Image (cartoon, rainbow, N blue to C red):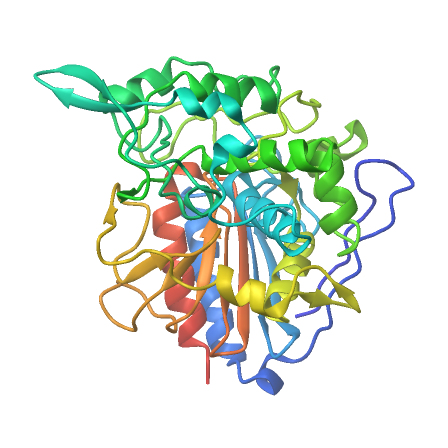
Length: 409
């Protein structure tokens, strides 16, 4: 299906995001009838009130074979969702920032085994919080946190939305979500909180990428937003991806249901029209489907797109490899069975165990509001899914995988 190019971005004179090449799905080894079944399934979910709307893109062999916008821009409007709708991508910010930190590695500005204290001295005060009889005892670190720990979420840092341990309760009340503070402020606050475990002992989804964003600022001497724009977003012509968008794009922002359709929880996402002081490396970007597809195509190509080399092929190969050895305990439920984690991406270790199809070596990540992408090198394929349905994301991610892989011939 033909992709519609995005309209102007943050500013009225911003160039359009160039669309990726397109082809008929059958010429790419994709079944048109089965891809239509996929779109029909998501139309049923919209009709049932599961999500207000979604965009689905499937690309193979370097060309888009399917790109459809389904449903509405939001529950309070009749405006159809469009190919150039703007979404809060939350943790799909993390892979972009992870590529940014690895670009600095390629310049010799850091090493993976560098201690974080080399760049952020406040981290020398960190202690590990050990629960005993309902109390938190603080013990020294057995070794420093490294850059590699931050990238693979084995730092011992945590977040407040993956559990309710005593350490996570401290995170919950620390004010780390305040968009009026800076990355430097956030890192200072994190340095005052205990770790949830010893560095390297466990995989715990965390604020690690926020710390990486601050390290990028320290090394480059630029704000995270400026660095990402100059080094990644502008070279890839991702003209709609930023930490905020302009008032002229207000009608293009996708909105969630105000109350979770599967419960009574109120849903409140950040306002993309407000320019934040906090440029969160862990989850602050907004983007469009085509913009993020250009990032995916660069990853799929081994680090290059349209003649622009963003990152080296072997560096990207390292990032998309599993970095969790057998001794690392996996905490929480965000990492699917049969998967490990690389330097910014989850990575499939084996064909079985996980309750959905894909290939070994597939790497991916998602966002808290319902966005999702994956790159499957073995099938020469990537997919991008955009929606704003936070609590429906585990369901829509698995549904999407099942239906896309059913169309692969």
